[in-house]
Length: 289
Figure 1 (cartoon, rainbow, N blue to C red):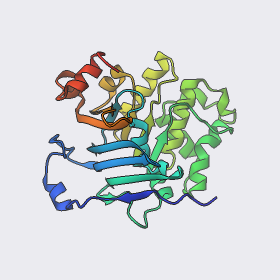
Figure 2 (figure 1 turned 60 degrees about the horizontal axis):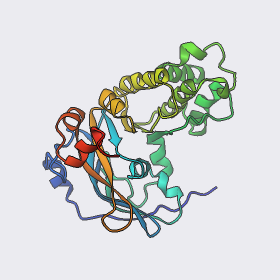
Figure 3 (figure 1 turned 90 degrees about the horizontal axis):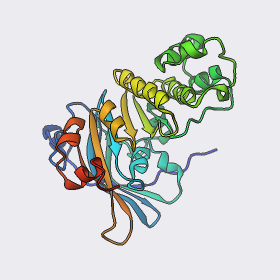
Figure 4 (figure 1 turned 180 degrees about the horizontal axis):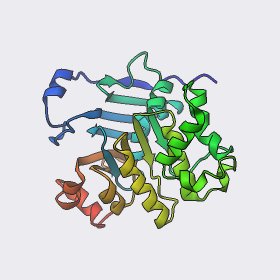
């Protein structure tokens, strides 16, 4: 099946030398020293409906960046912009600029399928394939032509996902025989099997119990030594525990519709102890949202 055409993207004129020389982002927040993503004035539309506006931030390499905010504020839409999953939705449009390792993610000639090999995704609900535990990990490397000892690769990925000791004796069993938390760790093992640079996680613990949640959080912290991680979460305690930087999104209803926008971004410690915007403080302390 052929891939959907990429959504229309209009980029503002941004001098890369200015970005490189400027230690703060568009909102005056210090940038990560080594940014994997640099997002400038991002807006996103589903047809005539604007879902996001004025999103500008940088995401640092080997850091965990948490995206927090009320439901409907565009957090999931935003991370789907980062690996171009929204391209699969007809009628979408992107404005602004997203640079990945210094190059435009939406430049002519950049294929979304190639981007998704470098930027993996773990979804809110565990979604193992209806195959064995082994095949869930092995299928993506095989499809992508990765030359490796597959047994060793499967063991390595399951070990990195803190699952090997629990499944090594039943690799040919169905992935559906695993618990919810184990299935989510299997999905993480599957995501890292093709050696991505970035892992996007969309509320990866929302369907899990507290014990499984802690396992996933510990895994995220371990994985950031090799990967850049962006996680959407509604759990304030989780964001505070695992992330290096936090971005707060909210919903703007000033023009009659509901449009997501980013209010501020900063180190997690600063965001949770001394946010710059009263809206952030109100959300974190539970006064709204």
